[in-house]
Length: 210
Image 1 (cartoon, rainbow, N blue to C red):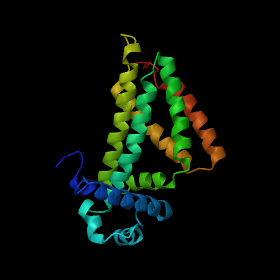
Image 2: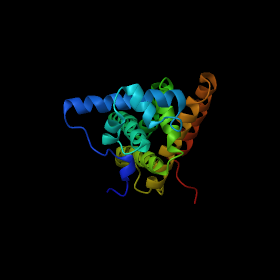
Image 3: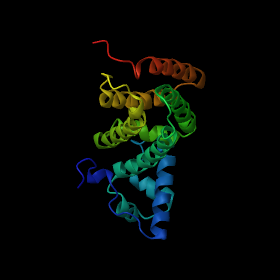
């Protein structure tokens, strides 16, 4: 067992053959739809199996419980975000450029998931399950590592910023602020994100005063 990923949020059996992969895709697609409609707490494994047209035993063959399904959906979203962040920050040419990219990523993040209620439902599910929350934190920390790796070559040698701590903090806050914006009406969401980007430009790489 991976201590950072408990068995209950992990595939019980990973699909290998094409038919099994397709079956798991159906399970996850239906789960995403049900979560979008009613939230993680209200989704039942029996209902999921019935809507998917798959025997309940086959669902449990791959997923030990609902948390594992939420974990798999979170993994999908996390991989998409990490891939996008990695591609964007591979092009960093200066610290100012890195900050511009952070602000651009906030806009992408918001627009990409604004029309994806399943993502919002999965994220809200992280707050009611400690193991899923840990997965989300690990994802946020990985995004911070990607950003930190991209700016290291441009940092002044005399910098006193605790960058590991600060980038992890900002990575988490950026994710939380975007998800809060997604839950708001579009006009207010854009205003809030504009203000948040001003805060980032001022503070993300600001040297400590003492």
